[in-house]
Image (cartoon, rainbow, N blue to C red; front, top):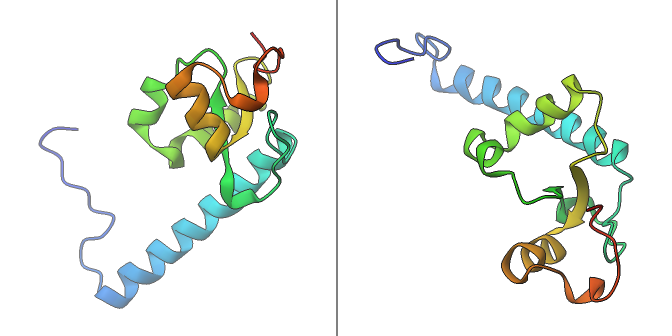
Length: 116
């Protein structure tokens, strides 16, 4: 929206801005927890269940466009599409990083776990 100013924060005191931002973060946290629940609540590769470590993985490594829009956007995207299982899965940060960097996680060597 070139040329348009975001009026969401205009005219608010710092305290009001902080309160709005806290509310936005809390809404996102709740939505994220629902997404994690819908996708099984654990890493598909190693079984990690710590929610702070879990991430949505694009099975076919085609998530660049989604990453550019941010994590706040992906939770709404998945909800609007009924939490599609095809193309998405939960991985922990370590397994997701290994899959992206090396093509597969050491836990997955010789196994078919990435849904391809």
